[in-house]
Image (cartoon, rainbow, N blue to C red; front, side):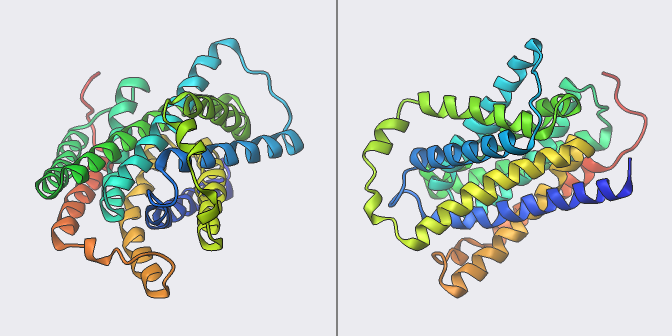
Length: 309
């Protein structure tokens, strides 16, 4: 493998998490007054799906999908698009930008667990300790939210499901990346994902009830940012990264998201681009974030011998 390709893969995954870090703050300000989570997701998935297919038909050579891989692509659409995004937007709507950024750092730990069962990757004692520590931080954060608000706790729970769903997606998409071009995988993944979102019962009624006349230029810019940067470019860059990086390595970048969320929350509030969410940044949450960070770090330490599968 050329060093340059490996470097570009790392830069791609880093940029993806920068997009996501800003998204936690930007998307929060649109829901639910202007767009419901279901409508936001429909616009996001539809817009990105169209962009992917346009690029695919113009620049990519058509690849024939083997019959046995259609089921895996359907699962990628279910876990990587439908469940992932539905739980994220509904969770973010009920929870806070800071909480969502912290909870997403559990993704590498979830990837480690799933890689152990699905890809037969070794599970060391350090990884077991890291998993338990990271889970403790997430549980403490959720219990803390539950003590303040039932909606906040439900939002955190949905965000946990979102992180787990995305972890499943990262793991099951890896074998497909070895057989097909990234754009081929992502087009079919989003097509399945869009189908799932459309058949989700509240989606169409919420869309028909939306008053699009209240959408200002700023709101439109935010929606386009979510479609183009957080979805179209982010998924494409993630696919590229997965072609050269392991699922665990790719997911590890996600632990910088809480730092980026805090940075963008302060920056956007200062310039008046979003509401001021700085009051949600507390020492208690930073403490839980630190616990999860330590868990992720311990999980990433490779030490032999591995616990036999």
